[in-house]
Length: 250
Ligand code: 1GP
Image (tube, rainbow, N blue to C red; front, top):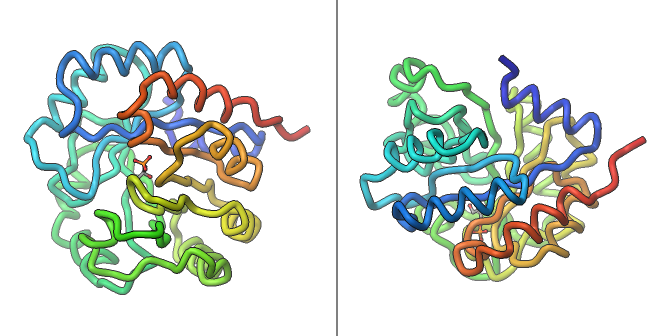
């Protein structure tokens, strides 16, 4: 079976972009999730990410099982904490917060959870997670107890991503935080993507298809949208179409 990571690197080589819907398990109940799945299938969404900085309900396993039973869109965990690891998903973004200097989120929590993460049988994708300042405090910037990278410091972002990749991280995720006022700039995406080989995931505060498209043109390989779709689910198709319309490399 092809791993999700292999699929991502093959797509990157071919210049094919992916669209991901972020599902917050707190915000979807039975009916809502079915509707989301129907729209996602129609829009040819590539992945679901499930998780968040704060997951309050106890609905994570059930939410993932529900998605897996209803469709074959891969489910990738995007955990805010080790408690958000579910064996029902397909893969795990094994996040290390390389933009911050909080040792707990760089390595501490990983040490504590290593045995059960390994036992989960999930595909583990080591991910250099970079929080970029989103214009106002976001949940991730508060909870992580670490400063985000200032939004105009493209060189800091570039060097952080390069260091993460040389440390062995297989994916880089630039996130301005859920609901960010200011999404990651195209200039920063360009700078970072030109300096790494790893597939680049970009999310946080993306609210329109044009921005999703421009991010991909600037070098993002995977676009993640949560909030905007929670507010208006018809955006799924527009966003997905925009991402998939980026011309492939020849
Ligand atoms: C946040 O990248 C994700 O971690 C998505 O952010 O909810 O603002 O789309 P939004």
